[in-house]
Amino acid sequence: MSESAAMASELAWLDATAQAELVRKKEVTPSELVEAVISRIEALNPRLNAVITPMYDLARAAASGPLPDGPLRGVPYLLKDLGATYAGVPQSMGSAFMKGVVSPQDTVLTGRLKAAGLVVVGKTNTPELGLLPTTEPKVFGPSRNPWDLGRSTGGSSGGSAAAVAAGIVPAAHANDGGGSIRIPASCCGLFGLKPTRGRISLGPVLGDSLNGLTNEHAVTRSVRDSAALLDATAGPAPGDPYYAPPPARSYLEEVGADPGRLRIALTTQALTGVEVHPDCVAAASDAARLCSDLGHEVEEAAPDLRGDVVAPAFMTIWAAGCAWDIDGLAQATGRTPEPDQFEPFTWALYEMGKSVSASGYLMAVTGLQQVARQVATFLEKYDLWLSPTVAEPPPPLGTFEPEPSNPLLPLFRAGAYIPFTPLANATGNPAMSVPLYWNAEGLPIGAHFMARYGDETTLFRLAAQLEQARPWADRRPGVRV
Image (cartoon, rainbow, N blue to C red; front, side, top):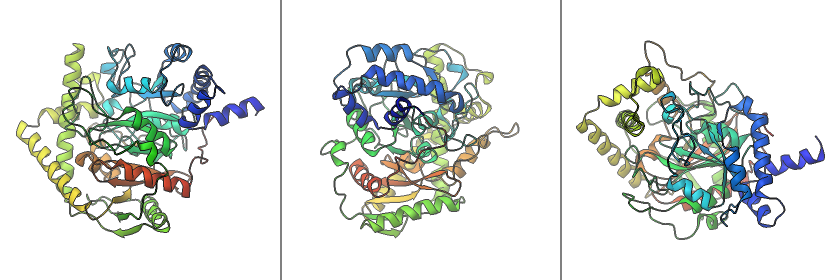
């Protein structure tokens, strides 16, 4: 590797905060950072399939023009092709039904990312409508895990996670309706925080999504980048139906602050009773030992929740949400949805959602609200609840393929894979996946922490402490810059 290539590689592995500091010091220009990212996309994307919509001309124009003097000025960024929209750019959502549909406006989140000085260089791959915990849409093909190209990146923010893990960008947009930030973070060895319900506005079109299951944020390599991004994007917008209580100070100030002696509950068994792979048990247990070594009090405990109540209520809202999503897209585009425009699983879930009655939907909402109260009571005793992020290491691509006789098979396969993450979506609590463990095959497996409603502060404080005690930034996959 030449000296210039080596310098470019090291620049790529700096986090967004460090890159922004170089821009402020005028040691590098936003245009130079953007061109370097474009080069990395062109070099790596044929293997990873992480970026499905390049936005090079827009990025070059933004980088060369006057950028807002925000905290991340000049840093290249990627948007997931779901959720946050960018005016004038297609938003396909992993679906043939939406391919070629151009977004008419920025979402509130996109506007805040731009105001922070970030330069969007492209959009990343996602499963159709973000419905599955793997990123293998038929219309764009699968994203591939840079730790093992035959493995899933997780989903639904798998394209973003693959790009960050491989060093294309230091951070990328992600969102989370059942674990879609935290699952790819676990699969790709990244830090992934799902904020409190209502922390980041879904405006201007949406008030909430799937009765508040869905949250916006990012996947990052460093804890401080996640905090800086949340500082830049959090807060209500006019007309929001509700919003999370504001923090006492900026999240970036909490990174490095003393978390105190925390009481942490450890759970390694799934509430639904599905089998948890020994590697995932080991990842959570290893995180528990590290927390104990750092002076925290850890004990095995779990709230008395019935998995046979939680899972059906969640699936009812998930299916109804799929029907709402497709019907809403049809109304917005003037297109008529037909089965051949969607993957078999998506259409089967759509039909399932159409069969949900109004009372059935509201009963499911009530059920999850009762679960939220039980979890809140449990977290009066404990500061954090620790578990595995997923129930098995990154699975092989194709694991979630439906069968002709059973198109809903991926839904039940997902239930076996992700019994832990959806609970934080149901309750609205903030939660994070922290990359502390790699198994014997060299695959990352995250440790999952849930905090009290509105308490991202404790998560950031502990995450920074864990990052310092066991740094992960130098752990790099085989496919990388």
